[in-house]
Length: 208
Image 1 (spheres, one colour):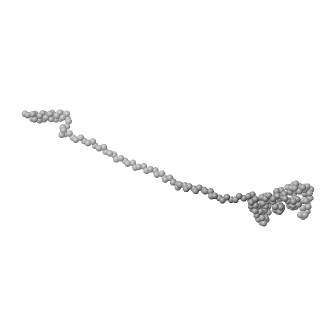
Image 2 (cartoon, one colour):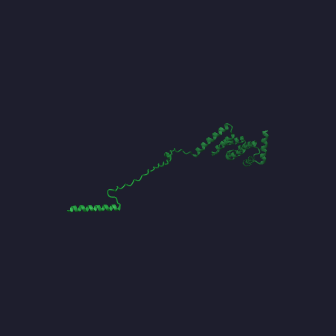
Image 3 (tube, helix red, strand yellow):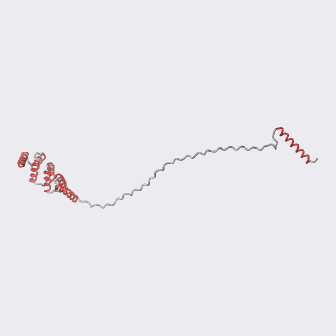
């Protein structure tokens, strides 16, 4: 026997011993080995798609239009009015009040006419003589003796004593028991109570 034959025989013996050992142990032979089973793939549960939550749509904020800038008020250069002198102002007032006086007198509103004429005389430094008598006559016509006395005290400085006496007598004829008139007659004309009483009696007799 040569070496090759010996080696083949030895290999056959080893193979038979290995087969016998596996058979006794219960292990499957190489032919009987089943291919390893692949692990079953886990069933993938379908994922429930959750509907996306609808976002709350907030109402659009009202966008106010930008405020237009108001044009700055440019003060226009006003022409400087010529300043009136004191005499010119007084003359304007005289024209206004005198016009009122004339209009009221024309339509028979003597109380208003007297008021306007009094304002007219008050604006003057030296009231005209005839207008003072006119004013007192209108007060007597209205039966307003107290205002007649006030007018004489304000504007009657240039009247003569005869003119004052005439106005006072006419006022006594209209209102004989006016106390203020009696006081004025005593202070300005120097009449005594007896003289005033006599004047009133004479005026009342002439009135009859």
